[in-house]
Image (tube, rainbow, N blue to C red; front, side):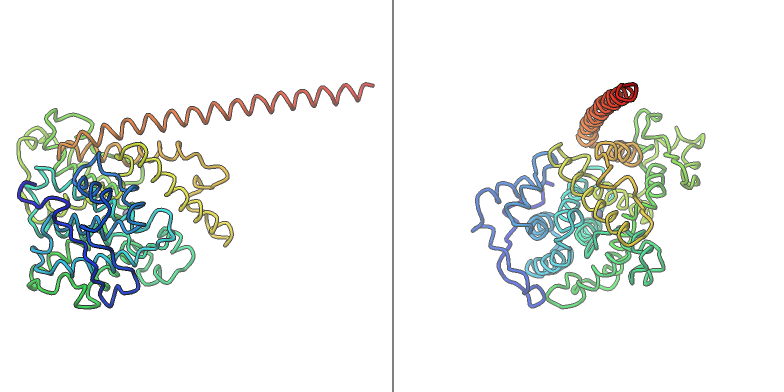
Length: 417
Ligand SMILES: [Zn+2]
């Protein structure tokens, strides 16, 4: 951290647009930007004090290029890749332009949010011990491209509707394959945006492999495979208690148990004393975990932001369900029907199934209790909201039961007359 540039002094988001990004207005130079924007970007290396929604408002939905420049320069990505700052900015502008602004959730603000999260994770001392500057660059690039050109519908929808992308990728990890592939296609499309053009062949191969690996790891159908691998190598080793929940393999229904079984071996205590070597495979397991946590880090955000993300993703899912009903396709997320959905209930299920365990593991390794504390607080909030909703439903049911009873009494009274 200390040797990195200050968040804002580093960001010189200048006004030079490349031919490839000419369809987007260039962003003004940081020094000419409003005080509020500079103040906000100054806090972009903080987890709790940075407000992505405020950045979205101040930049008129140009979060990815503003936060991207601030963050990539803070991590000296241009030096690692031996590219100019303007190439970096052209690249961010092009990637941002290829996110669908019409998606309520999977748009460029989400990409910027994931970039912010992974940058914060990279600042953790234990993570730093495992990551080279090329690993850091790969993490930040992967975050920026990880949902590029997301159609606002999930992979199951694309498969069920025989979409071209599903055919191209044989129904396998369809969206993530598309994001990774398009990310590289855009990057290589023009020298003015090609952030990799000065890298030697071996470094390029490494960064490409790493970025693809991370983007593919955001496929939630592989969730338990990745977190159990991470737990096996990292989380349980660093857990001082050795037997806390974070050391317990997650063994949810329908998930492979191979990796999990290995963790529960009697050698556990001995393993706890060994620091995992930073082999390429272990570093890959760590980076997959980082992008996965960053991708679903909404529950670890302050409540106001956490709620806004929950409503945005629900809206995108509602819209998919609307389409599925209209097109006569299978409804793949029946709980996300706008006529019946309880958002608090869906959030509680999400925390229970995916979030709480995964962030406990991240905390056990990277020592980020602030995140798990916020998750616990937000979980309590959704529980309270859920209880309130249930109370309202019961009240409505009682009232309608009374009305029915009164109607029946009225009817039987008029019949006997
Ligand atoms: Zn995402």
